[in-house]
Length: 327
Image 1 (cartoon, rainbow, N blue to C red):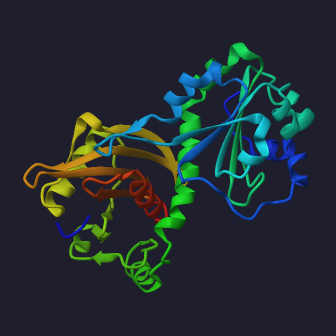
Image 2: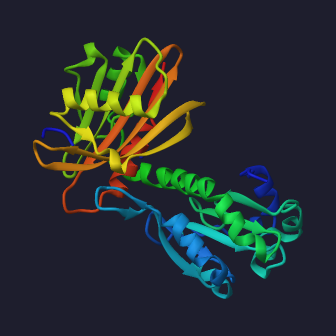
Image 3: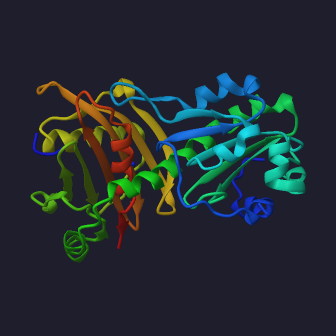
């Protein structure tokens, strides 16, 4: 083949609660792998199996990979663990670490049974802390289960931000990006070294890709809106990749569907495994479909990297997709 990212997260409230943290000097460098969550809690025995299930849910790639790694940190050695990239603090308002971080504001954050907070740059620039508070021990597991989808979505957003920097480590090809913006009805940041294939622009199909490893994005658009039914969107993807990608199709047994917000609009996010039976190959994909000002758009990213881990590459591709803006 030639080609191959209470039920509320309240930042204002979180920043109010971090009054004690704001006096802490910012450390210059983060440590630890990307896509790793460092859990700080004195109640690991209560939440371990639930949290492993939520955070390490496997993602088909097609060899399943856990979406995030897990590291368990000791609250008594918090100074050591406070420099990791993503921190997940779990506890009750009276816990010493929670009290140290949030102060008396911790008492106001759980008027119901539990709450979830996301805090940017608490101890290190570029770091995120997620704080889960339960009113009492009996609410720890029910609260984590209730917030499972929100917690995964929050971690995914953080990972997208982290891996966007990796996707654009060589920068944006401003010439190609400006040319597309001038000629088409959208803007899109083309990473350096990526190849732009405009052969089918007349049919509303554009692809950009790079090799080693093979990964790429296609953009499809039409001047009529579509019903965002996942089955029909999967069928449309198959028809496009069948035509333009030498017969690729979705392996439906591994497909996941989420409804997210993208460009302040409802967007159906499909993810899973693509395959090409004729060539005996496959890999992971992620697909965004949405309507915008009387147009329909489908943005799709794929990875082909046999024998290697692929999830970080897939998240980078999704980060590239998210630079797309219609005009």
